[in-house]
Image (cartoon, rainbow, N blue to C red):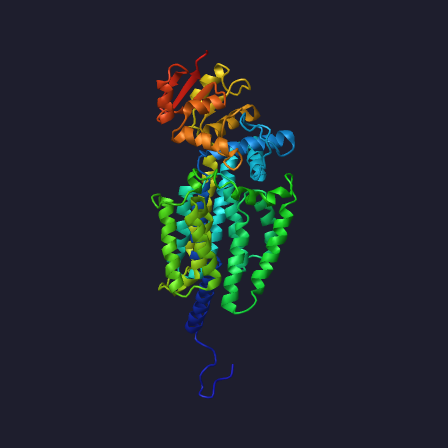
Length: 500
């Protein structure tokens, strides 16, 4: 080997070569570690998965809702008959009258899941719906940048769901609204609106809210751009096509005009709690109020008109009726998120590593464990319904009998329909949008106080099943000439008409 000009070897000493090799190996190992770490999910995604789990937890709770019972009974009828009912099959007060089953699709799904797997599958289905809503809201909160305001915004929706959401077709409408906002924000392609609007039209009468949202958004965008809002108009076009296609269904295009007919029945809905204006005495209304304050703060931070106008419009809707708080929360939270990026905060959620991966894995494991628990636990609670009293009446042939007329509360009608199907022969249930206004008012008089004897005579009542702690029950106890109380329990009273 030739020597260097100064007589030194060109080869490095063995110790130096070993050191260099160690450095290289260390660098390779570090690169592999960094690459492995980069493959993990980031903290924002992990927290989003956890929020979705909380949404699943909210939606998969034990079923206690009275409206669900009628939806399930109607789904059973659709499966057995192979068609959607076009007349009322349940009541003696409006039996045979034309009935538009706006929510036929969720009813069909409920019944199919129940008959094939059991009611636990319905709990899982509603849990998936709520998880998707919360996941969508987490994605829409991303413009807030920092994890703290994102968690607060999405957490507000989760909390509202825990208080107000139940296994009703409304959940389908809320998910559809969430998809629409994602499309408007360019997270999804507009073609998603074709199947989304078909499902929304055939699930819940709130689908006109899509046009209210996009109309206000388009006007706001025109103000922001000082010109034609091309993207918003494109979205409205897809929205219109999807809605019109929604008219192709087993019920027919009359589903498209059902919401207009519902507006014409505002008088019948005046005594329904969810159609009344919020009094801000309930937790859900407090959450709504806090988001209104958040909207005001966002407006001062320079919120764009395309976000401010729809949010303001939905605030007004929420102030008019409690039921409108649900869609209003989605619109407000998605609208104010970009303005919150101006708030200080360095925790953006880009961090990766073992902790975010563990949180994500825990979220998935929690869902799996919860599904396993749900599949073995009771899916339905009937504690709020007069089960024992109806048992007593059934033993004597005094219920689900075409020759016997039972007067009862609205929620009892839902239970009787669930238990007896089209043989229920109910007086009234919670379909306030369907029953004649005279019947709605008579039910309100029985509930709040009025001409009890006149109403019972008008409907030729044979049996009364009513809440024990009520003015009507007190009257039945006192009127010994026409009525005799046979059962007087802690929650429910049964009275029979005295034979002349």
